[in-house]
Image 1 (tube, rainbow, N blue to C red):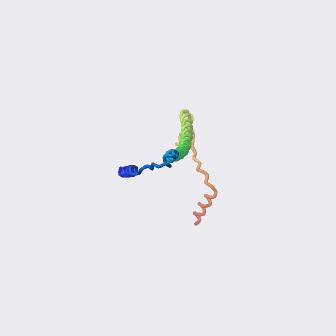
Image 2 (tube, rainbow, N blue to C red; image 1 turned 60 degrees about the vertical axis):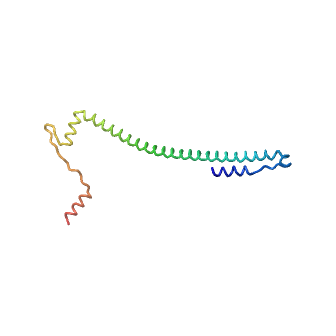
Image 3 (cartoon, rainbow, N blue to C red; image 1 turned 90 degrees about the horizontal axis):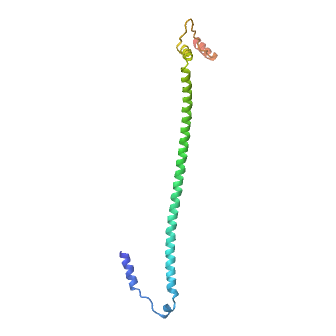
Length: 145
């Protein structure tokens, strides 16, 4: 308010010239008005430019954030797809095993194999696993020492 009052006082203290030149030159007022309009136009353009630049920068930042989010989600989707594929293959294997376990002959064969059960009249022989020749040499070398 103080600044405005001082400007008003300056305008009140200024007396327009009233001489022949000022009265004869009507273009002076128009030139002054044009200059004032030009200043206002420049101010409007400056404000509009600042707003436009801020909007463009904001949109660019928003776009880059969206593209980063999209890339992260695509990576996550690829991981989830891999997990899904693994789960589907495991489910398929389990379904196959379920169908085998529904067969009585398969269960009997599995029981004989895993638990050394036998049918009547069968004799079960266990054969030790074959040992590599290199393992035999190292065992015999250890015994010699």
